[in-house]
Length: 162
Ligand SMILES: [Zn+2]
Image (tube, rainbow, N blue to C red):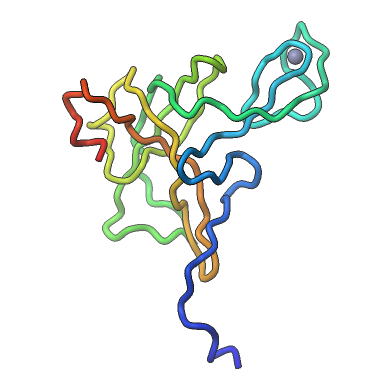
């Protein structure tokens, strides 16, 4: 009776990549790991060996990363995503940012939320982590982290963050 299957249901929201971020919709965070010996934070999480050449640590504890950072670099992704990705028609290019997390001393890449183009982004802008749909199938929405301009009253482009 497959053809009589359920009417359209609300889809499960699941991570596109397991274990890389929390699913806290209001305050999601990337999940890294901190070396117990030297305190270096890694993302994606390290599990076996510390990459610090001066450290022989092999114990790591999970740590949520800062939810805000500053744009360190950015670019435009102008290619059409491959099948089976269902792209918007016409395809809308999205922006990619490299975001510096000061506390963790690292740079994390991510897509920028839809509606924000590279014209809306400048190096040094503060951005905030959000969850958004990367793609979906009949049952699930697959979530990934994206960066969104942080609300800033001083910004001359305040309207762009809405
Ligand atoms: Zn270490």
